[in-house]
Image (cartoon, rainbow, N blue to C red; front, side, top):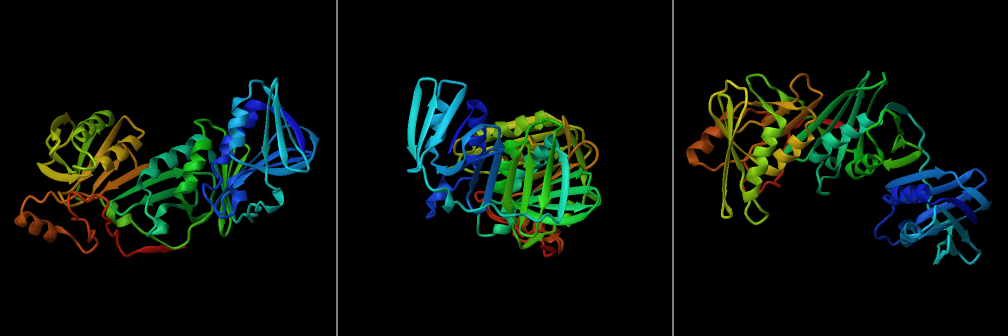
Length: 405
């Protein structure tokens, strides 16, 4: 194999594809990058048996062939001085790299042992702008469960229904939903691993170029700017959180996104991994007061808002609020609250193109408060919500209704 190509384009494709390489595996070949030179150009691919990223780039092919190079190959290409690079792999799998007056040699692995990417027979496809798909992922990623004891929640549920796309993530303490209009009139439901979506988002840009999602029985393919990202799908039961977003009887608090985010971030200055405490949020007429006290210190901040609600105090995890408020893409937001033990719901000023939900923490103000809080809960409320203020990673049960994928 011997080819010559533009170093910048080559390096960019290598870096993007390398995100799908295995970190540590008993199968050494999947820790590298497959390079295959054919008469039509240069094919690059990494595949860790769950996620694969492939890209074809233009190159002057002098001799066809294939080899798998280790990750160190990327650093060698990065250090080359010239704009053109020549790569030559001989029959002994010694890869010679040359650009201007700089040369490297590195040992490759036979390409015959590299697993083939799954062939996805598309049963459903949808197209949307790259900027829109990137926004969908960024607004739901913060609520993806990061513990493998319940693998189904480490992914995002995509529901397509006659021109509407709904993406849901949850981790037991919070829920994120993004609603979007798409050009597909079919119906489908599938769950994409969160790690795959993170890698997909890195390939997306804020442009109007179209990205395509093609769904098969066991895999999904994202086609983005010449890249093919193939991911396995998750199977299992995904909780239906619809009933938790019932806002009847709620008080509406309208507030500037930057103001409320800054208020919570001030509380974070006295919270650490060693000293965790919920932020005491007191909502009242036209103001929100945040208070937090830990062995590190105390913080208090008041911000203006638009509301007519009576004084309601609830405890919320500061990190959960920061993640949700950062995901808001509007200058203002609506915060819907009922009482201290009901979820906080975050919505845009108008409509519901995003919906975020955060479960409150028990402030442990006294036995009578705990008794009253228990009495307020209905049969559809979260059973495990009153975990202690120092254990924000405890998981709540979001109900019994499930989707069976």
